[in-house]
Amino acid sequence: MAMSPRTRADLFFGSRLKREPVGVTFAPGRLVLLGEHLDHQGGPVLAVPLTEGVAVAYGVRPDTRISVWSLNAKAKDLFVSGEWVKTGRRWSDMAKGACAHVASRGYRVPGLDLVVYGDLATGEGLASSAAYLTALLQAIYTAIGEHPTPRRIALDVAAVEREWAGVACGTMDPYIACVGEPDTIVMLDCANHTHEELPMPEGILIESEDTGIKRSLAATPYNVRRRELAAALALIKQTHPELERLPDLSVKQFEALEHDLPELERKRARHVVTETARVHAGVDAIRKGDREGLGVLMLQGHRSLSADFESTLPEIDDLVEALNHAQGVLGARLQGAGWGGRLVVLREADA
Image 1 (cartoon, rainbow, N blue to C red):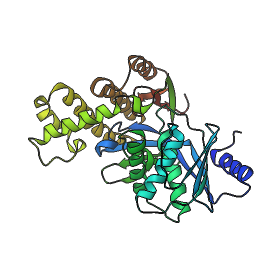
Image 2 (spheres, rainbow, N blue to C red):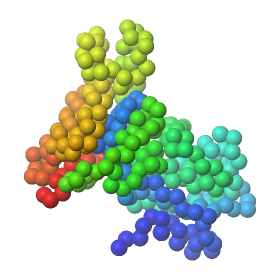
Image 3 (tube, helix red, strand yellow):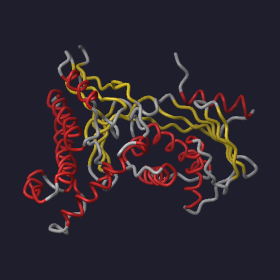
Image 4 (cartoon, rainbow, N blue to C red):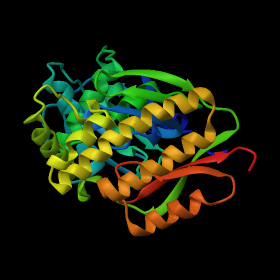
């Protein structure tokens, strides 16, 4: 049996630093069933926490230096608390960004030893970056005696991603990493950061399927889509100034005004509005044990990502359609930010 990330980080810390860590944090990755690109719009999402994730073994040092050991990168970085200079090594810069952000909130960040290891694939849409930052921030805060809420951690992760990686991500991934438990489905309202754990329906498996296409989120049109959605909301607010968020529109309300929008903004907004409706329908399907209905919603969500949000690729669309016609498959769709990564697949458990 493979060694868990917690155990590996813990053992390395003790063997290399000759003392026990103060603690070990862990943050899992996730799969998104429904609700793609709704988190950054303040909408609802349905996500499934993974057993794979990132662990950080941590301890406090007597000086002001911070050492970060990345067992995945087989490398170490050492810097002084308060000297937050980018090196161009992403794993190191994100650790500095996490420390810098905590310091920017008025906390004194002491010297720390941080040992990081994860068994979560990177560049495949499984929220590895959010898991990494969540585990780091939990370690840093706990080391200074603070215990922030999942909402606080989620907002901090989003800020570090924005300031240190240039990605205007939402808060879903770190929030799920804070609250998610195996074998559950989390319904998260990203407007008010409240969540509900739904039981996994009987007779199904939720798995991932690799598209074989890796991507870096910062290198995709993700930030462009954010700007396009902001433009769509601004246009709609000209006639509906009371509207705060696109997910607040019902499908019927959107259909009454969509023809006043330019084509690009209409398509982007239509994905958000219809995907919001699919999340609510998905919650109903899960509660009723309607496996087939949930699978249909997943396929509809993928087709919306392809036609309206344009965050898929032709080869991914072909794979999704093939899977949706495969025996034992109830539904499949691209999940994560898009343009590559992994699919989420809903299967019959006895297939």
